Image (tube, rainbow, N blue to C red; front, side, top):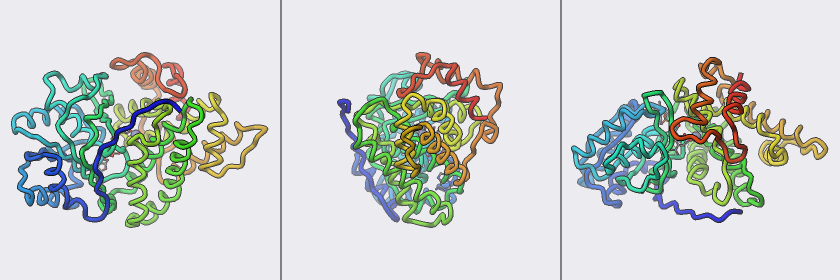
Length: 391
Ligand code: NZQ
Ligand code: ZN
């Protein structure tokens, strides 16, 4: 295991009706004038936004609102939010929604206290300062409620980039699994896929002797395999929703990624797809991950076989571990299809002629060094081959 530091100071409030605590938590973390940031309207339709506003008022807090965050959030609205924060003297940013609203809120929070262009952070500058951020989560997926990351799409060129820094960790996150019961089945499944991808990005490592985090990842993957069909079958199953929601946080606040090399090339490959075709991030990952695994299996076939045995219950073939490894990839592919995810390029609306440009942007775009991935260093040619496997 490698040396590491881990500091994850987000205060979590988990369970039924906890959104009523939003005002109390904002106050606890020093907010007085709040920007409420949300998406395309689901939080209005469900009545959640009204409940959150009521809880702010009850604590004597004032607020301004900025809705309209699109899935795969755009830089244009971030600039608008930054101007609004400066004009209104905002001292706390509260995201109500999914990963897109949270990521947009993080970008605004950083830009509001920065003299330069907020996009500098998405070109690699570490985020050291931001307004305090809180979240009321409505979908278990991106893990942004506990992560130090934010992902934004730049309209000029339509490419997606991430920024990171401890200042991006929310001060608090309110996780009420009931709020996820209004999700369309497709979004629930895309969220589940993203959670599993966050675990797999960490599982595929070159670091030896990391049994503790291997086992935590495997446990969380097994939980998703158990809970996903239950929640697809019965969207009102609170306990399944609760397990998935907490797993989503654990999968991405990095408690299971510490002390090990992580990969993340599948995310980079997917980000091109959701930037160009505006597909759901999780749906893109459902297509990317099995292809990435097939292409990279030979780098450490025993690790792939171990995953197949421990998570998918495959029989270990000691003479031919590649057979076991392949069976595990096939089990993942079948599982994702069974929960309603796409399995190929065309289902995402993706086109073959875009492959060279996407592969180039994934590897070289905005400061890229030419290769991606910690488990296997992939060149532009490798990435092109992986895209082609997705047919
Ligand atoms: O916009 P509204 O109307 O709220 O509708 C949303 C949106 O259409 C809807 N939705 C969310 N909660 C709902 C609901 N509909 C009904 N009931 C509810 N309770 O679902 C759609 C998707 O929402 P979005 O916020 O886009 O989903 P998600 O949480 O999957 O976020 C995806 C974004 O997160 C980024 C992705 O790249 C993508 O841009 N990621 C962020 C990460 C991070 N910050 O750490 C890591 C991830 O790997 C990921 O890259
Ligand atoms: Zn993701």
